[in-house]
Every structure is written in structure tokens, then in C-alpha cells.
Image (cartoon, rainbow, N blue to C red; front, side, top):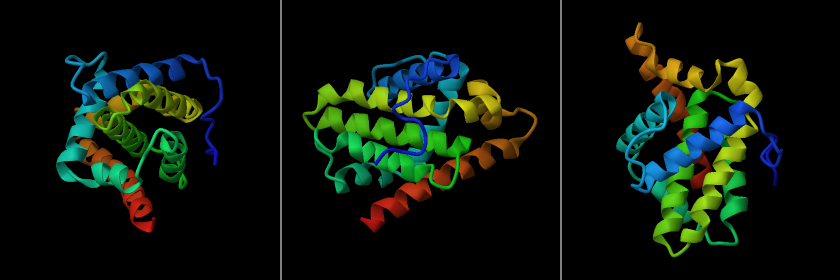
Length: 179
């Protein structure tokens, strides 16, 4: 099942390229190998994902285990979950939820004798968000994500962003419990 978003599209826009850089940074961080973020946006993604894992410590881990991910099922499962996250539309919170899931999936692969899939998961996340380039560009580019969650003029902006992220995670939870 392919997503209605262009996962397989050979996208080479600067926005898509930056999405892949962010995926590499985030997954490296999640695996404990990326000490410094590559940009302000990368730092924001890390901060949000950490907050998600503090609020929902077992959701993403349980999702990987419950889905019984193997080398054969990893890619179709990733596409199915990514499609489900965006079934009701795109927002920054859902994009962050996709990164969070990709990070957990990469960690799961790394810890379950599928280390060779970590680079693939990174590519899948990068390509998927690359397929969202049009939306990302119309919402301020990747700097729009950073601004959305770190608007210094509004304390509520951060929590509104966390709420949007929670909506993406709610979709993941519903998906997990429906299986």
C-alpha cells in the first residue's frame, strides 16, 4: 500500500534534501551517535521527540514490538504507519510523530539483529518527508517547524505544537490497538 504522499517520488528539492539531513541527524541522535544537532530545526525535532517519549514512554516501543517487525515487513509496515499518520492531513505535529516513529523503528532494528536496516529506515523517513515538500514549503520550510514550536513571543506556541504532535501519536496508538 503506497501512501497518497509521494514516498517513492524521486524528489531532489532543497526541502527534500534537508528532510533527509534531518532524518539522518535525528536517527543518529536516537541511536546515541549524534551528540550535536546539525541545525536549529534538528535541535527542535530532538527536543520534541524527547518530550513525546517522556509523555508516552512505551507507545512507540510497544508499536514496534506489537507489529512484530522483521526484515521482510519493516518497509511495508513503515509505509502503512506513515500513511495512517497523515490520513487526515499534514501538520507539523504529525511530521514530528513520523520522525519519532522512525527513530524508534531504527532503534528497534538496531537492537534486534537488523542493524543493516537502520540506514534504510533513515532513507524511508527522509523520502517520506521529501514527499511532503510542497506542504513544508508552503508552511515556512523547515524553518517553519522551528518557528512554530519555538516562537519566543508565545509560551502557548510550544504547547500547541506538542498538542499537534500528540494528535499524530494518537493516530499511531489507534493504529496499534486496532491490529
